[in-house]
Image 1 (tube, one colour):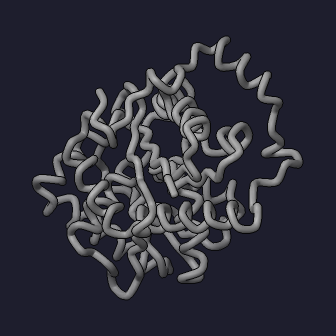
Image 2 (spheres, rainbow, N blue to C red; image 1 turned 180 degrees about the horizontal axis):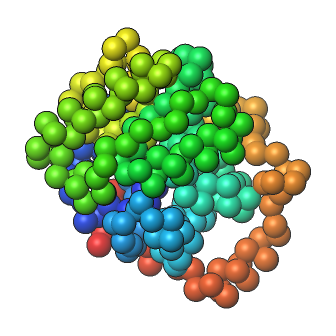
Length: 271
Protein backbone atom coordinates (compact mmCIF):
# COMPACT_ATOMS: atom_id res chain seq x y z
CA UNK A 1 0.00 0.00 0.00
CA UNK A 2 1.24 3.49 -0.86
CA UNK A 3 0.04 6.58 1.02
CA UNK A 4 0.80 10.09 -0.25
CA UNK A 5 1.16 12.53 2.67
CA UNK A 6 0.65 16.05 1.36
CA UNK A 7 1.78 19.10 3.32
CA UNK A 8 0.57 22.61 2.51
CA UNK A 9 4.13 23.86 3.05
CA UNK A 10 7.35 23.56 1.00
CA UNK A 11 8.37 20.87 3.48
CA UNK A 12 11.60 20.11 1.61
CA UNK A 13 12.92 23.37 3.15
CA UNK A 14 11.74 22.56 6.69
CA UNK A 15 14.24 19.89 7.67
CA UNK A 16 13.41 19.64 11.40
CA UNK A 17 9.70 19.36 10.68
CA UNK A 18 10.12 16.90 7.82
CA UNK A 19 12.45 14.64 9.81
CA UNK A 20 10.35 14.66 12.99
CA UNK A 21 7.12 14.04 11.08
CA UNK A 22 8.60 11.28 8.93
CA UNK A 23 10.07 9.48 11.94
CA UNK A 24 6.69 9.50 13.68
CA UNK A 25 4.75 8.34 10.62
CA UNK A 26 7.22 5.52 10.05
CA UNK A 27 6.71 4.38 13.65
CA UNK A 28 2.92 4.03 13.34
CA UNK A 29 2.41 2.84 9.75
CA UNK A 30 1.65 -0.76 8.82
CA UNK A 31 4.74 -2.82 7.88
CA UNK A 32 3.55 -3.11 4.29
CA UNK A 33 2.72 0.59 3.87
CA UNK A 34 4.93 3.04 2.00
CA UNK A 35 4.45 6.63 3.15
CA UNK A 36 5.76 9.40 0.93
CA UNK A 37 5.91 12.84 2.57
CA UNK A 38 5.49 15.66 0.07
CA UNK A 39 5.09 19.42 0.12
CA UNK A 40 4.11 22.11 -2.32
CA UNK A 41 6.81 23.07 -4.81
CA UNK A 42 6.99 26.56 -3.35
CA UNK A 43 4.91 28.76 -1.10
CA UNK A 44 4.77 31.31 1.69
CA UNK A 45 4.91 30.31 5.34
CA UNK A 46 2.24 32.90 6.26
CA UNK A 47 -0.34 30.15 6.59
CA UNK A 48 -2.51 32.12 9.01
CA UNK A 49 -3.61 34.20 6.02
CA UNK A 50 -6.43 32.65 4.03
CA UNK A 51 -5.05 34.09 0.79
CA UNK A 52 -1.75 32.23 1.24
CA UNK A 53 -3.57 28.98 1.99
CA UNK A 54 -5.57 29.40 -1.23
CA UNK A 55 -2.50 30.13 -3.37
CA UNK A 56 -0.53 27.24 -1.84
CA UNK A 57 -3.52 24.99 -2.43
CA UNK A 58 -4.57 25.75 -5.98
CA UNK A 59 -1.54 27.06 -7.88
CA UNK A 60 0.69 24.93 -10.14
CA UNK A 61 2.74 22.60 -7.94
CA UNK A 62 0.30 23.23 -5.08
CA UNK A 63 -1.76 20.87 -2.96
CA UNK A 64 -4.45 20.06 -5.52
CA UNK A 65 -1.92 19.62 -8.34
CA UNK A 66 0.11 17.22 -6.18
CA UNK A 67 -2.92 15.15 -5.20
CA UNK A 68 -3.91 14.77 -8.85
CA UNK A 69 -0.43 13.48 -9.62
CA UNK A 70 -0.53 11.11 -6.64
CA UNK A 71 -3.61 9.48 -8.14
CA UNK A 72 -1.99 9.27 -11.57
CA UNK A 73 1.12 7.68 -10.03
CA UNK A 74 -0.83 4.84 -8.47
CA UNK A 75 -1.04 5.85 -4.80
CA UNK A 76 -3.79 4.17 -2.81
CA UNK A 77 -4.84 7.16 -0.69
CA UNK A 78 -3.92 10.74 0.14
CA UNK A 79 -3.51 12.18 3.64
CA UNK A 80 -3.55 15.98 3.62
CA UNK A 81 -1.29 16.78 6.56
CA UNK A 82 -2.65 20.24 7.27
CA UNK A 83 -5.44 21.05 9.71
CA UNK A 84 -6.83 23.62 7.27
CA UNK A 85 -7.88 20.73 4.97
CA UNK A 86 -6.64 22.62 1.89
CA UNK A 87 -8.15 21.46 -1.43
CA UNK A 88 -9.69 18.43 0.28
CA UNK A 89 -13.19 18.70 -1.13
CA UNK A 90 -11.93 19.70 -4.56
CA UNK A 91 -9.55 16.74 -4.64
CA UNK A 92 -12.33 14.31 -3.73
CA UNK A 93 -14.25 15.67 -6.70
CA UNK A 94 -11.56 14.90 -9.28
CA UNK A 95 -9.48 11.90 -8.10
CA UNK A 96 -10.75 8.32 -7.70
CA UNK A 97 -8.66 7.46 -4.62
CA UNK A 98 -9.56 8.21 -0.96
CA UNK A 99 -8.54 11.70 0.24
CA UNK A 100 -8.59 12.69 3.90
CA UNK A 101 -7.74 15.95 5.65
CA UNK A 102 -6.14 16.38 9.06
CA UNK A 103 -8.82 18.75 10.36
CA UNK A 104 -11.95 16.84 9.36
CA UNK A 105 -10.48 13.45 10.30
CA UNK A 106 -9.32 14.70 13.71
CA UNK A 107 -12.62 16.40 14.54
CA UNK A 108 -14.71 13.37 13.57
CA UNK A 109 -12.40 11.03 15.50
CA UNK A 110 -12.51 13.30 18.55
CA UNK A 111 -16.29 12.86 18.65
CA UNK A 112 -15.73 9.13 19.25
CA UNK A 113 -13.40 9.73 22.20
CA UNK A 114 -15.33 12.42 24.05
CA UNK A 115 -18.55 14.40 23.84
CA UNK A 116 -16.88 17.75 23.18
CA UNK A 117 -13.57 18.62 21.56
CA UNK A 118 -11.48 21.71 21.00
CA UNK A 119 -8.02 22.44 19.72
CA UNK A 120 -5.03 24.74 19.91
CA UNK A 121 -4.05 26.54 16.71
CA UNK A 122 -0.79 28.43 16.43
CA UNK A 123 -2.52 31.71 15.42
CA UNK A 124 -5.84 33.32 16.31
CA UNK A 125 -6.85 33.67 12.64
CA UNK A 126 -6.50 29.92 12.25
CA UNK A 127 -8.48 29.27 15.43
CA UNK A 128 -11.33 31.29 13.92
CA UNK A 129 -11.01 29.31 10.67
CA UNK A 130 -11.26 26.00 12.54
CA UNK A 131 -14.37 27.16 14.37
CA UNK A 132 -15.96 27.81 10.97
CA UNK A 133 -14.83 24.38 9.77
CA UNK A 134 -16.41 22.67 12.79
CA UNK A 135 -19.69 24.37 11.84
CA UNK A 136 -19.26 23.37 8.18
CA UNK A 137 -18.64 19.74 9.17
CA UNK A 138 -21.85 19.71 11.23
CA UNK A 139 -20.05 19.57 14.58
CA UNK A 140 -20.98 22.93 16.10
CA UNK A 141 -22.76 21.29 19.05
CA UNK A 142 -19.75 19.07 19.76
CA UNK A 143 -16.99 21.69 19.76
CA UNK A 144 -15.63 24.28 22.15
CA UNK A 145 -14.16 27.32 20.32
CA UNK A 146 -10.51 26.74 19.47
CA UNK A 147 -7.66 28.43 21.31
CA UNK A 148 -4.28 29.50 19.96
CA UNK A 149 -0.61 29.92 20.82
CA UNK A 150 -0.35 33.50 19.55
CA UNK A 151 2.54 32.78 17.16
CA UNK A 152 3.08 32.40 13.42
CA UNK A 153 4.30 29.37 11.46
CA UNK A 154 7.92 30.51 11.38
CA UNK A 155 7.91 30.75 15.17
CA UNK A 156 6.51 27.23 15.39
CA UNK A 157 9.64 25.96 13.61
CA UNK A 158 11.83 27.28 16.44
CA UNK A 159 10.11 24.89 18.84
CA UNK A 160 11.79 21.89 17.23
CA UNK A 161 15.07 22.97 18.85
CA UNK A 162 13.62 24.86 21.85
CA UNK A 163 10.19 23.37 22.63
CA UNK A 164 9.76 24.57 26.21
CA UNK A 165 7.92 27.85 25.65
CA UNK A 166 5.58 26.51 22.98
CA UNK A 167 4.70 23.32 24.82
CA UNK A 168 4.15 25.29 28.03
CA UNK A 169 1.74 27.61 26.25
CA UNK A 170 0.01 24.63 24.64
CA UNK A 171 -0.59 23.02 28.02
CA UNK A 172 -1.84 26.30 29.48
CA UNK A 173 -4.29 26.78 26.61
CA UNK A 174 -5.39 23.13 26.74
CA UNK A 175 -6.18 23.54 30.44
CA UNK A 176 -8.32 26.58 29.67
CA UNK A 177 -10.23 24.65 27.00
CA UNK A 178 -10.67 21.62 29.26
CA UNK A 179 -12.13 23.90 31.93
CA UNK A 180 -14.68 25.01 29.32
CA UNK A 181 -15.79 21.44 28.74
CA UNK A 182 -13.44 20.08 26.07
CA UNK A 183 -12.74 16.38 26.66
CA UNK A 184 -10.48 15.93 23.63
CA UNK A 185 -7.80 18.45 22.65
CA UNK A 186 -6.43 18.67 19.11
CA UNK A 187 -3.00 20.08 18.28
CA UNK A 188 -4.49 21.94 15.34
CA UNK A 189 -1.50 21.92 12.99
CA UNK A 190 0.53 18.95 11.76
CA UNK A 191 3.70 20.78 12.75
CA UNK A 192 2.49 21.54 16.28
CA UNK A 193 1.23 17.97 16.58
CA UNK A 194 4.65 16.62 15.60
CA UNK A 195 6.27 18.58 18.44
CA UNK A 196 3.57 17.81 21.02
CA UNK A 197 3.82 14.08 20.25
CA UNK A 198 7.62 14.12 20.35
CA UNK A 199 7.44 15.79 23.77
CA UNK A 200 5.05 13.06 24.97
CA UNK A 201 2.10 15.27 25.88
CA UNK A 202 -0.76 12.76 25.90
CA UNK A 203 -3.31 14.38 28.22
CA UNK A 204 -3.94 17.64 30.06
CA UNK A 205 -6.12 17.71 33.18
CA UNK A 206 -7.71 14.44 32.11
CA UNK A 207 -8.49 15.62 28.58
CA UNK A 208 -7.09 13.43 25.82
CA UNK A 209 -4.55 15.12 23.52
CA UNK A 210 -5.27 13.31 20.27
CA UNK A 211 -2.34 12.31 18.05
CA UNK A 212 -3.87 13.86 14.95
CA UNK A 213 -1.05 12.91 12.58
CA UNK A 214 -1.22 9.24 13.56
CA UNK A 215 -5.01 9.22 13.32
CA UNK A 216 -4.86 10.68 9.81
CA UNK A 217 -2.33 8.15 8.58
CA UNK A 218 -4.19 5.17 10.06
CA UNK A 219 -7.48 6.46 8.64
CA UNK A 220 -5.93 6.72 5.18
CA UNK A 221 -4.58 3.18 5.50
CA UNK A 222 -7.90 1.78 6.66
CA UNK A 223 -9.97 3.53 4.03
CA UNK A 224 -7.55 2.50 1.29
CA UNK A 225 -8.02 -1.10 2.43
CA UNK A 226 -11.81 -0.70 2.34
CA UNK A 227 -11.57 0.77 -1.14
CA UNK A 228 -9.67 -2.33 -2.23
CA UNK A 229 -11.74 -4.93 -0.42
CA UNK A 230 -15.33 -3.68 -0.73
CA UNK A 231 -15.08 -0.85 -3.26
CA UNK A 232 -15.83 1.92 -0.76
CA UNK A 233 -15.52 5.33 -2.42
CA UNK A 234 -16.89 8.85 -2.25
CA UNK A 235 -20.48 9.34 -3.32
CA UNK A 236 -20.84 10.37 -6.95
CA UNK A 237 -23.97 12.42 -6.34
CA UNK A 238 -23.76 16.21 -5.97
CA UNK A 239 -20.73 17.32 -3.91
CA UNK A 240 -18.15 14.78 -5.13
CA UNK A 241 -19.64 14.04 -8.56
CA UNK A 242 -16.60 13.50 -10.78
CA UNK A 243 -16.03 15.30 -14.10
CA UNK A 244 -14.97 13.45 -17.23
CA UNK A 245 -11.22 12.82 -17.50
CA UNK A 246 -11.10 14.85 -20.72
CA UNK A 247 -12.41 17.87 -18.83
CA UNK A 248 -9.77 17.45 -16.10
CA UNK A 249 -7.02 17.17 -18.72
CA UNK A 250 -8.28 20.39 -20.25
CA UNK A 251 -8.16 22.15 -16.88
CA UNK A 252 -4.58 20.96 -16.35
CA UNK A 253 -3.63 22.59 -19.64
CA UNK A 254 -5.57 25.82 -19.04
CA UNK A 255 -4.21 26.41 -15.53
CA UNK A 256 -0.66 25.26 -16.19
CA UNK A 257 -0.61 22.40 -13.72
CA UNK A 258 2.60 20.37 -13.70
CA UNK A 259 3.04 16.79 -14.83
CA UNK A 260 4.37 14.13 -12.48
CA UNK A 261 8.06 14.29 -13.50
CA UNK A 262 8.14 18.01 -12.67
CA UNK A 263 6.92 17.54 -9.12
CA UNK A 264 9.32 17.38 -6.18
CA UNK A 265 9.18 14.17 -4.19
CA UNK A 266 10.64 14.71 -0.71
CA UNK A 267 10.71 10.98 0.02
CA UNK A 268 13.21 10.52 -2.81
CA UNK A 269 15.25 13.57 -1.87
CA UNK A 270 14.31 15.54 -4.96
CA UNK A 271 14.63 19.30 -4.95
